[in-house]
Length: 164
Image (cartoon, rainbow, N blue to C red):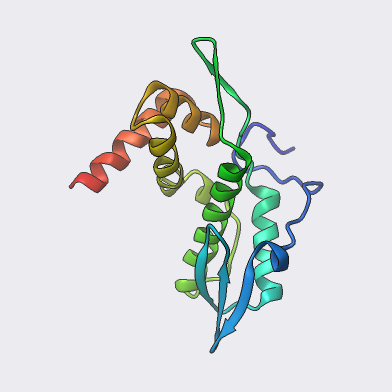
């Protein structure tokens, strides 16, 4: 049984994304360019059809929590466009990782619990709620379905990694 509170949760009824209308998809030589207002990636070893299949496989497994977070009586959450950006960034980044390393694209729980996931949300949350503020940390933990202490530790680790 899948855990609906986990970042990795197969959701077969989740609507598929029409990647052909969500992204401008073109062929450049032997590579596939996928871009829109959020994304501009060049993939090797993919066709438009395989990109669509991979992207939607991620959509059905990635289970971020975009529910509002209440802190001191105030409601905080990402706007739909920010949620869309985050989903697109995470999914295309993982597909890129696999294709650039000539690996088969495979959705794994380990990808969604990898420290890179914190990187993907930090830039957005730092800009929206301030760097390492109570709100930024609480919203990030909620989105990635991590407890606050674990998320704070992950953020501190990522800050150390980039400050070295």
